[in-house]
Picture 1 (tube, rainbow, N blue to C red):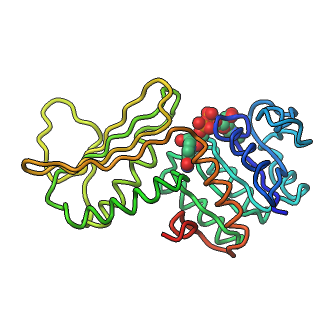
Picture 2: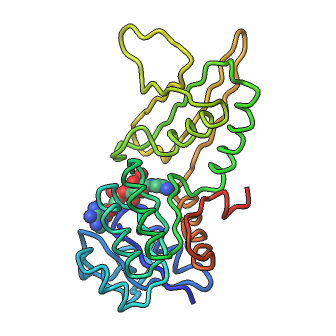
Picture 3: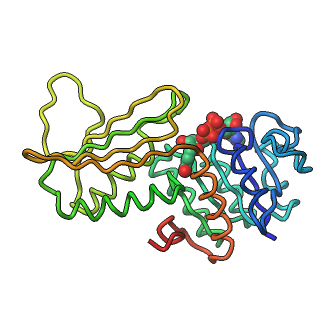
Length: 263
Ligand SMILES: NC(=O)c1ccc[n+]([C@@H]2O[C@H](COP(=O)([O-])OP(=O)(O)OC[C@H]3O[C@@H](n4cnc5c(N)ncnc54)[C@H](O)[C@@H]3O)[C@@H](O)[C@H]2O)c1
């Protein structure tokens, strides 16, 4: 039985991940952390019934993780919290699944260093849905033939999202840039802004949009749009729980969703 803990247990993703852990054959919730609802039952907070697992303060993370024999921690919080909590969990010998977006390169490096130092397995992905990871694969292939086209990444999310542009939009641009060789990124445009050979990245925020990503390849007299739309957060939650089961059997190192999905 895999014992999985969740940081951000009171958040939109954390609650859904707890319900997916409960439904996943061979996995159980071992611990839960957040800044709010401390002491309340994580299952009741997630509306899946009492699980006998109280939400703990992140300050007690190492002690709680060791005491609960946790195998893997799933973290969907904010970047400044993840960069502190993920190394704490790694130092307790716990594998990591990180869904938090907005991590800087330096913050990712801190987490990866902790993963290698403590010989655990880790994955950091801005998007755990199967469809988005296939979308990245299609973008890499399309870019091979469309390097002369103007390329724009347009994303839309709900009005509560804290970071912009989305981690998925940046990853889409990174995938294209890696195929075409080092593209400059331009984030939105205002005033005099003549277009060059950059990738334009644009963020839209409104209502309850779960997550739309469109990549526009525009040439002379034609264009191609490659689009992914998430209808619900379930695709992210089920992917993160599958990743948690996978990293527990992977051995030490950093992994990607491509590894997990065999892409
Ligand atoms: N990788 C993916 O597939 C994917 C999908 C959806 C969302 N996300 C990302 O997941 C993150 C969370 O999204 P959400 O919509 O659930 O946000 P949310 O605001 O609903 O939940 C975040 C939770 O983290 C908690 N938190 C904040 N600081 C903390 C700390 N220091 N220690 C412990 N808990 C802390 C908050 O109290 C809150 O309960 C965001 O970065 C979002 O972009 C990733």
